[in-house]
Image (cartoon, rainbow, N blue to C red; front, top):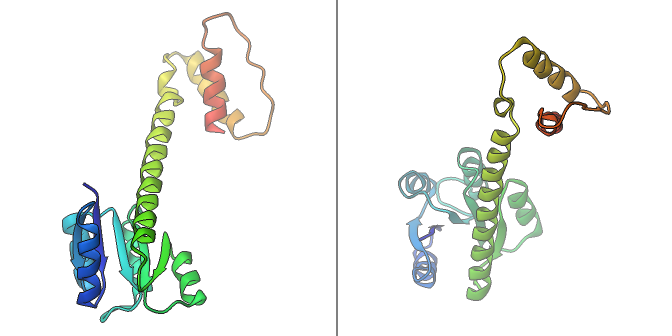
Length: 186
């Protein structure tokens, strides 16, 4: 089950959100920045609902620290005052979205679901990029002779240039592997 950390200094807001979200998510609560970072370390939430105004540190500063230390966690800012300046500042610092109190429950659920879908896609893209790195690395080209090492050096030189390359050779000699290595490393 996905985890949601609710960070708000008002107990009523925390409890209301907990009641709304507990059916679909594992919910964690924090009332200030110190509890927030402790909960992140202990519970590893996927999404954080973070109030702009906290008793110990400004919510924007907490957002900055979260995005620096835990960039994969999605942060949705919440506040009682709707100002464009604050929303823009939150988005600049990496907030996924910005919602105001009182909440529309369906809108909140939609935003969280969309955030989790985005997070899942980002993880999949990262995984696929790692797989591509493996497939098109030089380690997939077999050979240790002086000739193959010379080809690796040529690939590195070509990959750094904007030249057109013609690869010739007999069938089955690895022309496609070489072309992909050049393309991927360029």
